Every structure is written in C-alpha cells, then in structure tokens.
Image 1 (cartoon, rainbow, N blue to C red):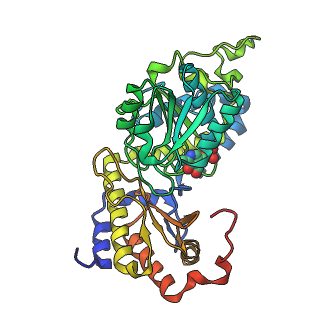
Image 2: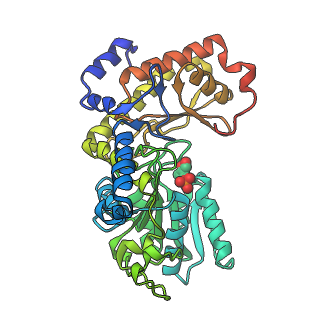
Image 3: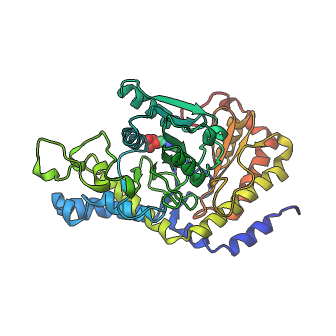
Length: 418
Ligand SMILES: Cc1ncc(COP(=O)(O)O)c(C=O)c1O
C-alpha cells in the first residue's frame, strides 16, 4: 500500500457526499470526537426542538399536550420511524424505558414463550448489563433457569434443545466485531430457541435488518450512534409474529388495553403497546425525534461505505505511523461492505499503556475512550467525522508517543468513567 499523506485525506473530504451533515451537529472547536459509540454528538436541531416542547407545548398547552402535541403516542410513533432504520415494520418497535429495563422485559417474554426450556445462552464478551439483567431475572423466577456463557465463537455450536433464548449484543462493545444475525437466528430457530439482540452499538452505525434476519426480540439505546443525548430513551422490538404470545412483567397502566378505564384488573393492550409501562419522558423523546430526523435524511448504504473507509484508513494509518509502538488491532480487519457485517463503526487497539494514551489524546483534543484491561476504542460517526480527522487523530497519537505524554503521573490512576 502506498504511503498515505494528509492531501489524500483532504481529497476524500472534498468528494464526500455526506460532508454537509457535519454542519448539522454542534462540535467544539479544536476537538476530534471519536466517541460517538459511547455518546453521540449534539445535533443542532435538538435544543430548538426541546425548547419548543418546553415553552410552546408544555408552557402553553399544559396537560393538553398529551393529546394536542401527541405526547401519549410518541413512544409508538417514534418507534415506527426508528423501525425504518433497523429493518422492522410498523407496530414492531416502541421507544421506552432504558436498554437494561427493556432487556429484562424482552427476556421475560422470551422465557415465558419457551416454558419447557431453562437456558439463556450468551457470550462472555457481552456487555455486562445484559448478563446482570439475566441473572436478576433468573433469581426473580426462582432459580429454575440458567445463564450459560460461552465464548463468542462458540455460540452457534452451543445452541441446543434446552436453549430458550440466545441473548447477544450484535456488536461487541470492546472489539466492534459483529455477529451474523441471520446465521445465528437460523441456528436458534432450527433448535426451537428464540433470539434477543442488543443493538446498542449497531443501530445508526450500519444497516440493520431485523426482519430480514428473522430476529425475534431486540433492544437498543438512542444515545450512541443515534445522537439522542445522555440517558436518552431506549427502544425495543417484538417481531409481529410473536406479539400475541409475548407478555412482559412490568404491567404498568400504559400497557393496559384501556388505561383510562382505570379498571382493577390488568388487561394487556394488543400489539407493541403492551410493552410500554409508564408515562413517557417527553423531553427525552423529542430530543430523540429531532436527532432521528437527521439520521433518517442520510442514505444508510452511503453511511456504511464512509464508516468502513474511515475505519480502514484509521487502521492503516495507525499501523503506518505508530506501528513501532506496540498497539495491537483487536477489531476485525475486514469490515464487510455487504451483509453479513464483520465490524461495526469502531476500531479498537490493545496497548499496555492504553489508558494513558487515550487520556493524553483527550488532553490534545482527540476524544476516544478506554475499556479494561488495555483497550483503546475509537468510534467513527460518518455524519460528523471528516477524513482529515483520521489523519489528525493519528498525528496526535504519534506526538503523544514521541513525547511520552501517556506516561504522565496523572494517568497512573484511572478515573471513575474511562
Ligand atoms: C451493549 C450495551 N447494552 C446496554 C448498555 C447500557 O444500557 P442502559 O444504561 O441504557 O441500560 C450499554 C451501554 O453502554 C451497552 O453498550
């Protein structure tokens, strides 16, 4: 491969069809933000939309906003719009609660649909909250079930007739490696099991096709690649074919068939609405709505092409410029330009001084993050990343390494959030 120069990256920016999207985000001057896989950047339309909700809707319409401004139906309305991004149909997605809470709800529903089976199958590399929520549910159900944890590459072979549900995070939060959703769903179904997918690092990062892959249940967050802001509302998916049979245990009044009858007996609503529990947090929902509008304006195939190009260039450039520093690529080298995807929209390198390198980069305005024990994560959000950001980020890494900034005393102790 010929040696890359900054001029190559400038040319790519000049020809980038997604370049105009950057203007729709607020990004601090002098910052190269490579952490959209943890918390997406702020779309400029969000503060205006939230302000309008507060002042016009709440301020002027008061309680009338539940009908007049559609607050009550927002979890499902927004769900239908999000559905188009994740390969789901109308009435299959609701924007509610948090990812962890939705995991509990969907896992409960799946276990109840497979009463003769006892095993939740997952992988050791899964995000811990998924495993913790499964453990909590198992205790709640009296310990009759078991959480079986195997290595990522052993999942397909570990599905058997005792497996009730295969619960996986599609994109590995540390390495960015992506499971083949279609293949695993087919293997699960062949054994009579169901699938539950956590799409926290997938939705908005690359094209997701829940129905095309025959997924049963899914959950995801809105605050990473979907840019809805810290703690933004999460979402859940129940495939249409399961909606009669799927029940969740958090039987709050807004999942009732007729909440305003105030009946004493719980009667689940038909369809996806039974997975709503409580009054929706409207401020968070409108922030998500405004952020989603930006994402829905983008062509996902184009977004994927740029994401792969940014990540590939970053890998090549780190190896070209910092190859002597001992950073080891732990993300798949081959991203997959067509499904099945192999790598999400992040690149991770392991390095014994990873924490110090990430902190020293942040001090230079290049924001990535660190995951125990030695993982440096760099997320690429094609709507606001420039190709020249890749060049400048790697130049900053080289400067950090040359000056030994990562060995500074203040990086010896890790902060509470890494
Ligand atoms: C894969 C995955 N699932 C779940 C969560 C946490 O979800 P929440 O805090 O919204 O419950 C995260 C957070 O980073 C995550 O990466």
